[in-house]
Image 1 (tube, one colour):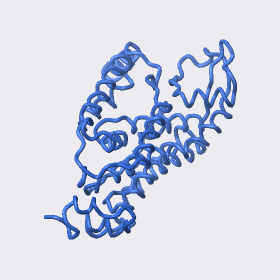
Image 2 (cartoon, helix red, strand yellow; image 1 turned 90 degrees about the vertical axis):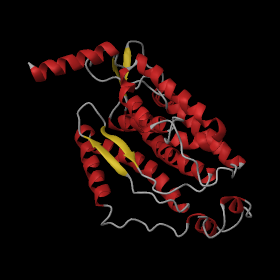
Image 3 (tube, rainbow, N blue to C red; image 1 turned 30 degrees about the vertical axis):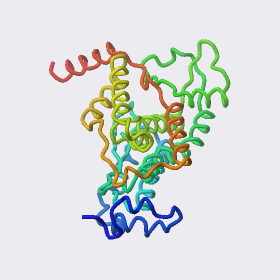
Length: 313
């Protein structure tokens, strides 16, 4: 049944300067009620556990910095969902209290109603990554100031990370070129910034219903299927060279590469939203690293064999 304001094509023909509340109510009905504190107990609990988890593995500076980035990302989505009358949950944070990790696997929100059109889809998709990215920038500068040069072999058993372009530029700008035979060792703020850039890049991949998938669908709806397939194929290629892509690739395969249509796919993007979408993928390019953790398949399999022997022998 069509909503009270008529079918979607009638909405698309309305003047562009109409009141936003009237527009979304004609399309979706009344705004969804904001969640109460009682219904948000799981969100609050997971946030507290994640804060504690990051604190344990990385310290207070890392906890504050990393949570600021993640909260900005997820609340960017949430606020824009509310603006368009899309029913969305508060963020669910994922604690991961494992040493040699970042204390979290990120966060997510769930959208429980249809998105009005491709303009709203673009705004919802790009808002989270850009909000988290802009919060990450000062953390990155502080992390670069905190970084130290030390001999490359001082910690041969420590975890080594690949550096996104933006991370390399920040280190070079703030600390200068890395001396020969030396390596850069980052502190808690640098780790928070690195993870913030990494999460931003993962979410901006143009696959399925990731943020980048929302943006790609809004930009090139007719060709989206091929874009999503190409993105998934790229993940499989990365997986061939690095085991660090195993979990993410399996997750993407489970979630699928399709994207549901909006209520009004025929409403085109305006030039400003096209430019914002392009900006989002530029952010993806400078945040992405093909080698997040410098570990080979032989190292990965050897670690699993050692764990197997420890547990079963």
